[in-house]
Amino acid sequence: MSVWRRVLLAVVCGVAVASVYAAQPVLEPMGRDLGVPAELTGWIVAIGQVGYLAGLVLLVPLGDLLDRRRLIAGHLALTGSGMVVTASAQAAWAALAGLAVAGVFAVVVQTTVAYAASVSAPGERGASIGVVTSGVVVGILGGRVLAGALAAVWGWRSVYLVLAVLAFALAGLVLAVLPAEARSGRIPYGRVVASLGGLLRERLFLTRGLITFFLFASFGTLWSGMALPLAGAPWQLSEAQIGLFGVAGLAGALGAARAGRWADSGRAVAVTGLALALLAASWAGIAQLPWSLWLLAAGVFLLDFAVQAAHVSNQHLLTTAHPDRTSSVIGGYMVFYSLGSALGAAATTVVFASAGWTGSSLLGAGFAVCALAVWAIDRRPGVRRPSVAR
Image (cartoon, rainbow, N blue to C red; front, side):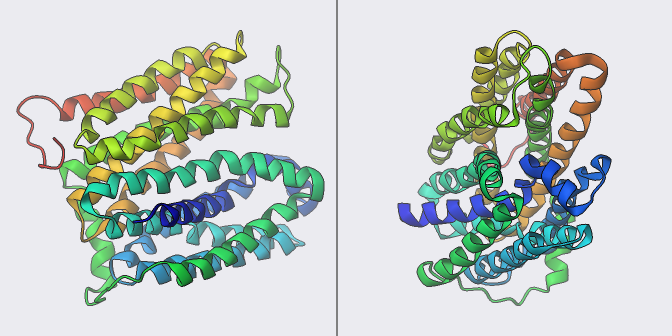
């Protein structure tokens, strides 16, 4: 798989995931313009997440039945349509409907990762996954910075118009330049969806799912809670200044893109363990937020490096173990990601209100230690493991 095709798929992932997270930096003006009460503006982000979770279960398995290239193009076009509805909405219900549609079809990210894994040579699968999933990080972190900049100049609607244009353009480009996949489509769709439950009986899938659940709970604890103490005393940073910490996170995550090559060389399990240890250690710097922004930035860098390295390694192991059903296994795996992210986001604000940033930091570190414990238990002598997890 050529480098430029990997980059194209990474851009697809970035645009798709940005459609889910773009509302975060523009919640206040968006809610005010649409008449949404302040206490309910969280639904502007939540509705996209709910749609995304539904898409993981209902749409991602289609990649094991149909040509993924056409699925990617179709889902991008529908994501763009949802963005158009949101950008032109004059009422809250219309904007939420558009965001829900965009969230459902933003699971094109998982279909794209599965496509990259399936068309890559076995010795390059990890490298492809590493590059393509780096687009997800750019979309989550870089998308926030871009959304804030666009909204400051042209208003929040411009954010969704730009995303729509990008989605439509990428849909056409995907059809024009990517090779098609042969799919028989003879397996009933219902059977493919039902088989997701069977994965829970597989040790490799369950272990990697639990690791990613705690991994992204730790990630969500940071990124959903950090703005609260930074906006207060003693720092009292503006939204734009807080957003700059996304650059540190982005640098860390992109630095871990090489984790795919480490996985290709047979070190996926070892890389996961090291990454989880670094994740736990990163909270020592993050906890210094009330006293040092430099130590906070270092911790943010280390945390995002660790999250991306472990995430790439997990997906490499799963797609190697299930080469004929990469879409289904990644879709099921990402359910753990969604649930973990939601737990971290919900828990950090509650803990911060009662125990301050020290409490939130202990929470994030606790999630990291839980992930490391799952990894360590799976590595105990005498535990039977699949051959891919050496």
